Length: 490
Image (cartoon, rainbow, N blue to C red):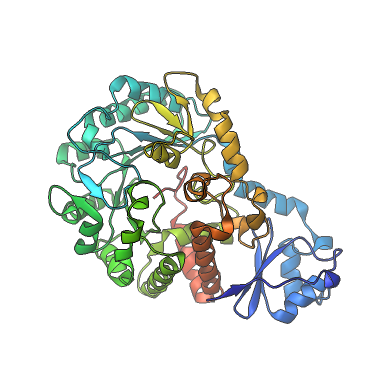
């Protein structure tokens, strides 16, 4: 689907009646949005009359535009400001997501590994107990009333004693701190056993794993020295899913789309459906880690990914005629489009979550603005390091000049293309991705693959949202996603 943004004739603009808006041509109609996150579709004549201040005041379209803050002399500032405050409530929370890398060792060699994991033989990249204690102490200095500790790697279960210690120590600390505490384990599940699972289950740890589709596709992307990665993942996914089905904590799976995934959207969605998953997260490749070196083999263009995404998304809509099943990227965007709340997914918000929404802790106690910044350090670039748990303190880390620079760079009003984009109220930039792709945290949006993908997805969502049947499906997705959680990083 093509989307064109026409030139607006300033001679026809009525600055008295017409409030601030941005617009984008989608098919035969115009999409108009504003900073309050409101939107409306207008036919060509409706758009021209709106701009010129000539809409019929007694009509339903004028009433809707006035209600949503598009008519300047009918603006309800109190209502619009209340909605804006709700959408941006994360700005007052402090870092809620704390990514803890307990080891860089891994028994997989995934083609797109962002972390540049190391082989299993050495132990010099394992976090020790002393460092782990310092990390948890630093985490609980956060001003956020909600804390999520997320184990990353490598494969976290390689360093099970430290995982176990952090869970126990964090629970102990929280008995005094009284925060809303969530703990997540991101694992390939190949080292899971009944004893580990019992401990994690008893301590209400959430599980997240990777599932790239059917066995042949998954095992091609995620090479496992012990045999079929897919077999291990599916076995434990089913067991954990059954056990946590009616609990407040659960297991989720996500996939990374490689060149080998293109053309197999139905196979991939059906794999998730067969496991009883609630939904699927269609993620594009990241320019970090191993994927950067083998892009010619596993990568694709933005248009190729969008073709895959649209086909998968439309198939998911057909599935929803029989059972609920969401796509997570869409659900994040739709929550922003259709409600006055933000799901706080740290990669798609403005400003981004680095330092003010999340902090990452390396195995050696190094502290980074975000997990992506920590990943970049594995490529020999320490640009996004903001200290160590063995020096300074929480205030010094979150007040670091790197955090300030990232916050400025990820504020969309500071991005020339983003500031005038119709999708500004719903989107966000990742300065680390910009830095990796363009060598500058400000980025260059016209040539950004990530920008093109986000625009393409939003074009498709708004096109589908213009159908009442789809809108009902989307509202069910949003309602399903309203569990009380401090962030979304599934």
